[in-house]
Length: 280
View (cartoon, rainbow, N blue to C red):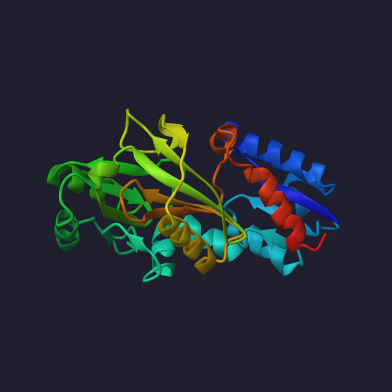
């Protein structure tokens, strides 16, 4: 059986390169034939692979592969629900706990941004608060807002830039989070990320990664979120507090730092799961 690891045609960095290298190594060790390619290149062929580990956010192309009989990991619908943070929250409403959030209504660029009711509702979260774009990765599009003037300026500049969200700032988790990896609906490892230089906990913003042993409650919540979103692979990121409050779910979570701690083998487990799922 022939498979593919599908990357974005134009984007690469150290984290994604590591993912591709490790998955390729583990599939080879399992005697599963895979190639590294992109969806655009695949659609130029007469014959598609039988499965694809899809490491891109192009949900339409993932869905088109599915419609042509390719088993895609993760499925297009699951990627879509994770890529949009508001959609993630909507899908997991009453399933897991999120931080208190105010979501701006979708706005078309036909009038000046002047929604006082929205700003007043956001202010009830207290200052500082978090402003973020519903779509964004690696810590981009997330801002710490400290005053009414900063809130007004953020909204004025970004109201027409896609959906935006305002979230209560959890000070005790500033610069820290707990990331739990889930593969095939089961716990696959966990890390804690700590950043002393920023309120963001992403490795790309300078956070260091430590091995972490989560409580049963955190593990069960991560597995519940993964199951509800029908994910083959993901990370569920929690605030670093004493109960499992979800920040976001990532369908394309990097795992270089987690693996290099030597406590878990994400690539091996994911490759084994894919092999079993496609019946090899």
